[in-house]
Image 1 (spheres, one colour):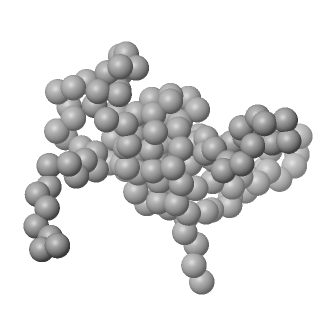
Image 2: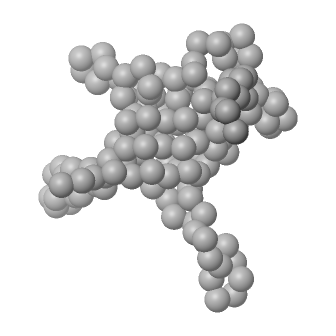
Length: 140
């Protein structure tokens, strides 16, 4: 059996970082992914996916991305349920559990957006997936 999700999109709001009772970081965010076609009245449409990341990755997401940031996620689809005590009904939640998150905005794009939560001095702490510095050793 195979359960794999790969998406590229933008965050719809700032990510929410919280900690479990065992002090494990968990970060939740919603990703908007444009559909490849327009609706009948030429409006672009998007799908919205609830995503969750754990541990160090959760802290990095909370630290380096914000509303509007473009990211690529690789993960798995998961459904969980809980009892809503207010209306005495079972609720189901489907979300993407992120195995990896790649930040796709460049440093200049983040600065152009005047993102106050981004700190340039901390960029070296995270692998942002920038491969422009790699020399091309291919023989052809």
